[in-house]
Length: 196
Image (cartoon, rainbow, N blue to C red; front, side, top):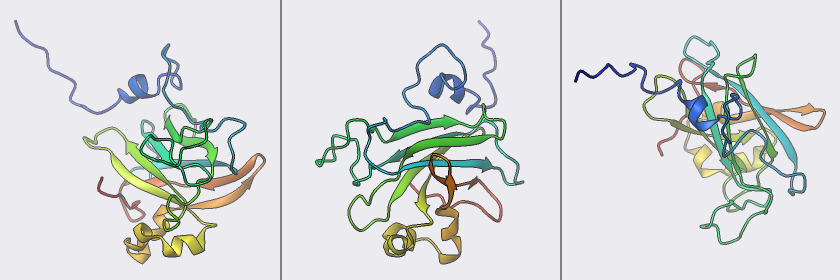
């Protein structure tokens, strides 16, 4: 028996089918999407939107973004967090960039609180995309949290001239606050990525 060659692109374009099937129109249920909070979830409603760019500043059409965050009181929806969490808030979202005409990722969520009184409010981000054997980790901080950002130990570990790559800019939107957070995979504006 002679085996056929496997696809040379070992990561992607399989993400859409396996990880975000509902968004891409497949007849399976996704475990997460871009809307993360129930209508009764406590906290300020926010939208985070952005584009993932390659080293030539071109939008990446098949990236997948996952976010995990605390609720408005800084509690994670996880059994290891002894404080418990809002029942209507899971804190996890997953969106691909392939169905938006502008290749954006969009999350409708709530603004997180500080998880320990030391770290600034932030959202943990994982980026998966074609050609990457391992996903990357980064964080989203908020431009209107300057005092908390100045004291955050993780943000302080980043060289000062690169910290702005981790800060989402706030604008006003009809349904609440809109934060813009673009992710640059390479180049002069490359986003800071962290080791796991």
